Length: 132
Image (cartoon, rainbow, N blue to C red; front, side, top):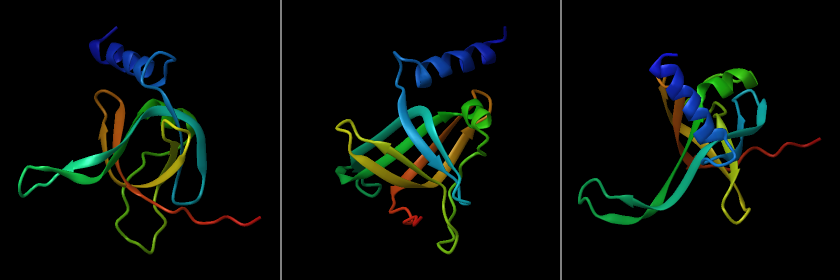
């Protein structure tokens, strides 16, 4: 087995295995199709670095990392940031460590096709209300 295939196999254990960084999330594409029960890595940190001064300041930096193979298996495409505010974005929902749900739109996506992972930068988001 090649090193790349072994690395992707290890990645699935790290991001999706019971003893890894596994965290459940639901991804929703611009058409409104949701992909619940996906597992990957998520973070939501209340501190960022001011690019002008290099000083840590209060802010919000959130991201997810998910295996591309998992997205393919779920029938989803690669999420990406959509800058046009008139178009619905890709967005993701995951709970914080205390069980509080948070929604974020994807502002940037950085796929690594050699390892098989996509990292997405996030911004807090209010999803559209769906009425029955």
